[in-house]
Image (cartoon, rainbow, N blue to C red; front, side, top):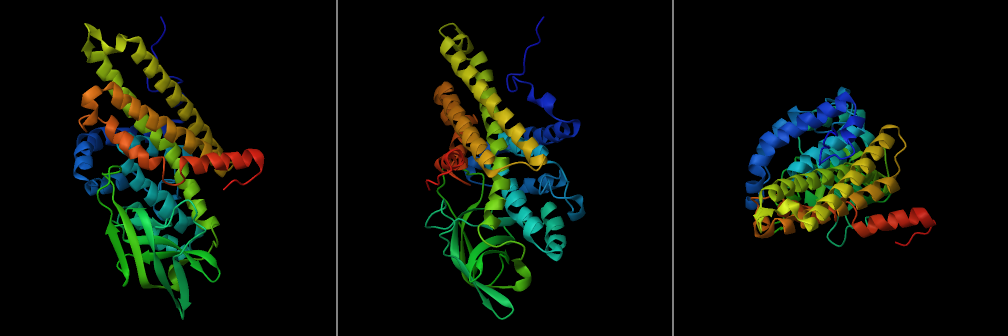
Length: 389
């Protein structure tokens, strides 16, 4: 007798994971089931980030998970980090965004571009959740063209003086430090800016219909003075922030898989129990066709991200490959979330169900760290050798 397949993992991708990778997935999965899912609908309703979960997230080793143990981190591989993102986003994109920004956009640049003193000072405390970071790159006049940066830093004696503004900054009003990218006379450079610095202001963005269980802010710099010791010395130019974004986008290729799996599981349960015209909704051909298409697309996304993770761990991952997976997997997830919302009928418009929450969140995920169009053009440039930006 044939064994019934796992509807959320038709190709048994889990069997391709190592024991350690499965343990990471199971540990984060339990945390999401027990601590996140019971409260996250209310958090979304109330536009509240569940700060009380940060110590637990840190204690599980999920912050800066791939950074070596020397710096107080877990030293996991890239696939394990991807699975962390997948499980956290199965809970909510806002929670994964928090961990992604802390790990890939704040801890990674300190690790990759900072001094040994900076690493030893910041990374253990950031891994413990004692110092929260935010990433200041995007500016109010547009995010897809970071080279058109207006924020600038001028050398003044032993210090740097920063002026400008950043927009759509996750964790902005939670953060103790901001990793700020600014134009200098020697190109774009990165700075570690304490958020209690004179002239620094974070203003939370309200009236959001997406990522409501996440803190999003505008940052303002009015003659903010930081010492030379706070400059990230080992990178100049756009290579710095773009290198961080590649790390974060890698995690984002995994995250939407979790959101899509959550939506599919919800409608599988709902259609099995919902009786219409004397039979379960799941017995309807139109419903089965939709469910089958969801499973097909989730399976494709799982295999894309797993291979991408193996390439990453082998040191062979290229930014274009990340763009392809980010484009595919975000599109997959948002389409599935919308379709699931539709299958749920009127009930699907409330946060009693997860589909509308995931669909709204994914409107941000498909936009941030490279819009769908930008990633399509990155792949097009790779195929043709012609830059169409």
